[in-house]
Length: 219
Ligand code: G3P
Image 1 (spheres, protein in one colour):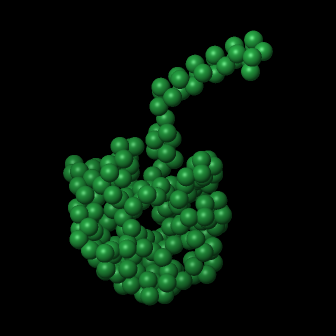
Image 2: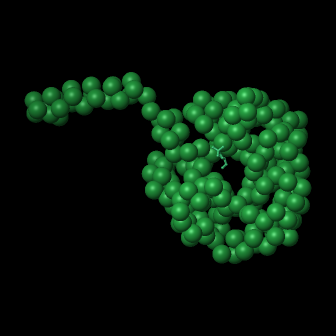
Image 3: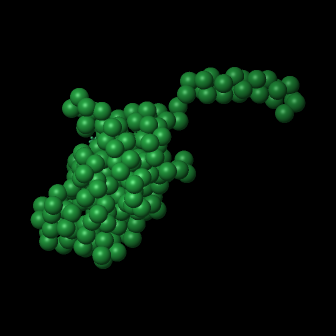
C-alpha cells in the first residue's frame, strides 16, 4: 500500500514527508501551473524532499516527442523521477519503448478498465484511473477501481494501480479495501485521514491532567 501526494507545492510535500509515511509524489501540467514555478526546478526540488517515485508528465502528443521529452527529463532530473504519459495510442507506444529502456512510467488519464489493461500490456509501472472526475459525471468512480482490480486478479500483472483524482478520505479507504496498490491525493486529504475530534479531545484531557500531576511535583 503506497500513499502519494498529488501536488507540486513543496511546502505541503515537506509537511507530509515529515510524517514519515509519504511514498511518492504525482504532478501534472495543471499542478505545475498552480505552483507558479519552473517545471524542472520544482520537480528537482520535490525529488530531493521525497525519495519515492516522482511523476513528471510529458506534454508532446506524438510518440517521438514524448520519448524525446522523457529521455531529457530522465537525464536532467534525479533518478527517482518517473515519466507520466497520457493514455493515448501514442502514449502506449512511448510507454512500451520506455519500458524496454528500463524507464519507469505512470500512464495517466485512465477512465476505463480496458485502458488500464492496454497500459499494463505496454509495461507501465503505474496506471492512474481518475476516480473523482468519473464521480463528477454522475457515475461511480469506485466501480472502475473494482473492475480494474478484478481484471488484475486473473493475471500476473506487475503494473501497480494508482488511484488518482481522489476527493475525500473515504475514496482512499475504499480503494485500499479493493486492493489498489497506491493512492495519490492532495495534502488536505492526508490531514483529513489523520484527524479525529475524539483524538483531539482525549489528548486535551490527558494534557490537562498531566499538568496537575506536574504541578503536584509527581511527574
Ligand atoms: O494527478 C492527477 C489527478 O489526481 C487529478 O485530480 O482532482 O484534478 O481530478 P483532479
